[in-house]
Amino acid sequence: MATNRTFTMIKPEAVAAGSMGKILDMIMDNGFRVVAMKYTRLSRQEAGTFYAVHKERPFYGELVEYMASGPIVAAILEGDNAVQRFRDLIGATDPTQAAEGTIRKRFAESKAKNAVHGSDSDENAAIEGAFFFSGREQF
Ligand code: GDP
Image (cartoon, rainbow, N blue to C red):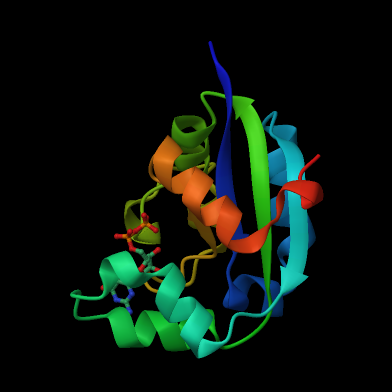
């Protein structure tokens, strides 16, 4: 199986709830290697740009406000079949639909405040990783 990369954020409400360490433990226990990581906060403008693909969706404004509402952890992760395996680890968007043992099942508050982001394709993983990290910040 190919080793490749995905991109994740631990979202503001999960950081505020003090769940950052527990979520990182789950990620690393599941065989993902950290390539790059930072604790940071998005401005509204940055959150709007990051989520521009969702501009036409009715919740776009809410999503931007939420993602700019407090600090986050952004990271690039590496592992076998990283995008799909990480989507499996985080679980469904809506935590009521997420499988037992997934990060969203354990930590998400709601479909909107769902604890973590995970890229949905190799192409988006590369774009999202480059949004936060220069080449020299990736190890
Ligand atoms: P994901 O790929 O599982 O993160 O889900 P999507 O790409 O469909 O949505 C992106 C993000 O938008 C989700 O992770 C949620 O934080 C947020 N979101 C999705 N659906 C809703 C909704 O109905 N209302 C609000 N406020 N936010 C939503």
